[in-house]
Length: 95
Image (cartoon, rainbow, N blue to C red):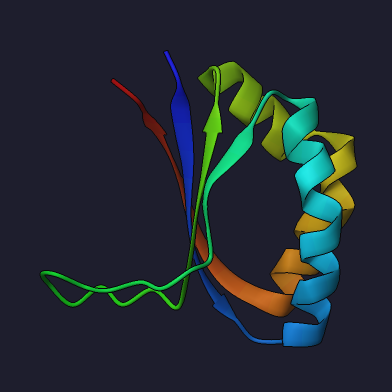
């Protein structure tokens, strides 16, 4: 069953974040992941949640998603993200 990594980002340093964006896709692909949503317009239909940047990644399993998130290849980009954005990230099972 596919799982999804859902990311709500508020970018605080656009220049650093652009560098992060260049490094991440190869790490995601290495673990069988792919982008479903990467940025784009967000419109709130109900409630007060107003993410400024929204990302959804699909992985073949929770094990692959967690392996990507904890891998050495993603350690440097993750630190860059921490330095350039505030983020909330969840892992959710697909159907």
